[in-house]
Image (tube, rainbow, N blue to C red; front, side, top):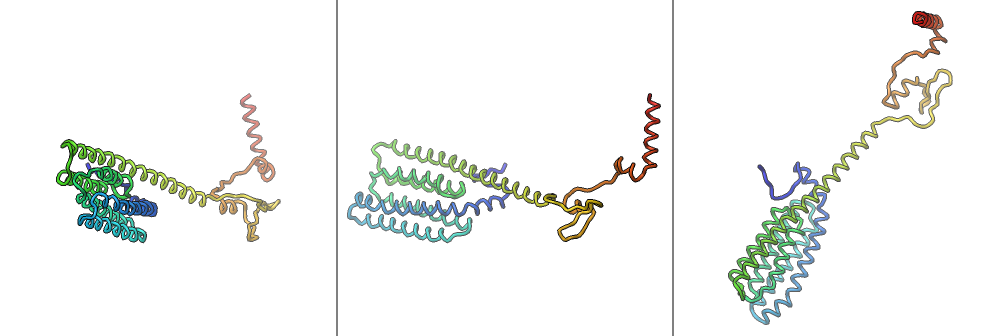
Length: 285
């Protein structure tokens, strides 16, 4: 049984069309995320100063924040010019990985008793699943980076009043990853089902339009001879009604003769038919 972590459309060509069709939307979402990341780094500067004061460690932390801003701006430039879904995925994955690694490194340099940042770290882990336009498998890899990094951080660099606090952090990250996986799976499935439904509707409309173009209809005023019943075309050519109808519709003809024409053009035949009909009637009586 072939189980895939990421929800994708089949065949692969349809998935490629889906990704390329949603690329502009994904780029807009990611640009907004990058601007939020820049804001996050900038807001961290006063917090770092309040925690570390005027120390050598502060310079290192601020250096990491500044590098994060530079990486954000570089990612902003690359994504703005991106026109390929594959290139977009690579840029986003590398950018988020560097962002999370920088956050973990900066948190490791903060005071050992400062643990409030775990709330931001949980939010970042959930944002990886809920917002980043990546396949679920890559989202899991990034979220696990954030999770394992924080577990190492809290196991070796942080000081808790109670040892049980570490297990609270572990439980919080495990729950965040479980919720994130289910949320991301449903979002991926819903978006692709909506795209498939729209594509099926577009395909059905296209087939209907083609079928309508192939249907030939007769409409308007048709000039017809009052005597021989020939029809005059737009080019001024007189054609038999059978030929004209065949050219302008999907109808065809099979010939017969009505009773009035039999009596008019073949009176002897009409008399024989009437005599035969009268004889059958007399016999029936």
